[in-house]
Image 1: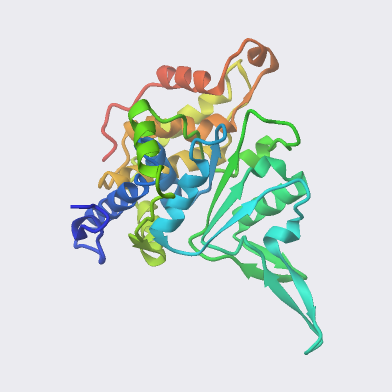
Image 2: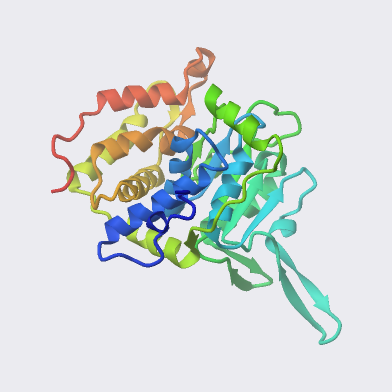
Length: 333
């Protein structure tokens, strides 16, 4: 049976066990998205984890590997509004946030919302826009609202921004500063598909466009799941483990800048959502270790000497994970 039509993979109402309901809805979304992004289960899971942790996602990779497909897959799997913004050097802040227009009929200014007013916003090639336009989007990401002429206009909830950027072609781009990178909960790379997945893509799309995805979840379900993920138990030993990992990044000689307390909070929130996806009501050290790189790597600033030696933030994090003792308890106490 096709999982997109199987009712057991598409729960329409909360079950008696919230953990089972969360895990079942997550599996339905993941299976649905993998029709569009084949062979990338780990990438899809990280993207959905970011959604349910209530954060924003930065997808950094070379062209043509499915960055936009990933964002479209999430949007098409939800009964939610979404907009795509193609970032260019001449894009103005008002082009994304909206602007006030004078209405001659009643002699007043009327606010016309920009494309940022959607549940999911795809900011394609964000590093091609000017810093002023980038800052306008990042402000909305942080505040979840737009202020125009002293009037506050909240964006829809849940609100997820998926920004993409190409790390190779840097001509005509504006690099995101570290303070702005810190606003993204996770940074991931899609990567090239393996041989079997690429063959399936070629044979499946030779005569048709991207597969039409079923709607398997609603805005109300996602809002509930975000709230539920925030209730997942984090034992004091696990919280201490998160703090020790982040604290260790601040004393590494290879780093000029370690992760901030925002990084600690982001890692804990992501670990809670990761645990909920597995149907567990508590976070384990393995959850924290699985998410350390996508949550923390983009928050680290290498020392110039280390950068010249070819050291990467991922290597530093791997050493930190090896050096910091893992809590002996399972994390349920």
